[in-house]
Length: 299
Image 1 (tube, one colour):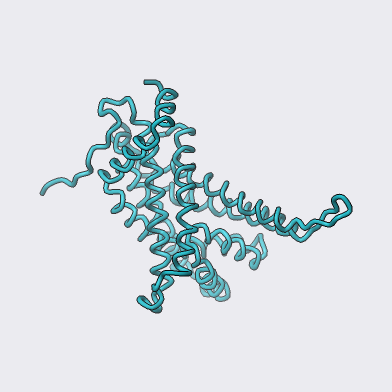
Image 2 (cartoon, helix red, strand yellow; image 1 turned 90 degrees about the horizontal axis):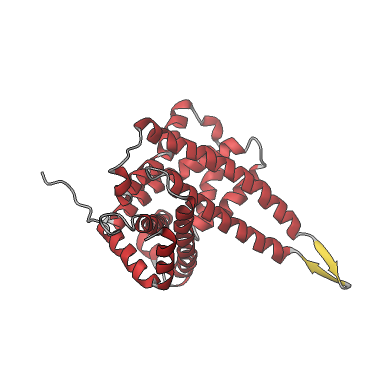
């Protein structure tokens, strides 16, 4: 069946397709993979942000840069961005103690999450790995290329967000009545964050798996993961603000546990979006598009 006919079949029977995706995700031990990605992301997020902010603070005002980081960290770790930005600000105040050993250590730890994510993608896209393998040098360079691209993206977003905030302080006169542009600015900032989320997810699905998928397939998985994350992050904010007793249980570890939970959920949805792409592009192959169970080799 051609791809456009399969797309029509998916749109007619979305429940059946989602059930197939969930079965494939379970067969690939998706929750176990998400846990590994979340753990290494927790190790990587602070060194990555420190390196990025130190580099960009030479070109952008530090206060404005930290405000942008805090705003968009809310998309990744809802309700916990203030604590992370406070740690960043404290490190920036004493960055004169940053030596080459610490710099290289942070560069190494900031790349761990990307390396583990690539390995997790290899499990989900195992049908590609069986056909084509990536050179180890390329795999080693991908994380650092991503760090550079994320830094450039953060610079661009900071400049655009600054312009939108200036727009929000202005007023326009329509039919002899003055209207504030604050609401328009807030909406544009939200859309900018959503578009950036879809863009980053699409780039992950294009680069991290072995082989080069179609842009339409990557965009399909990115939109699915982004929509699920939008619902999930609002539920997380509500949960932490109303029902959660995490502060009572974990005490001083509350921030780390909350960030880990958010990263675990984000990693699960990220890999679930990859599973959507995998199931979609495997249709018509000899296995019928059904994911084979992921098994470890017996000793």
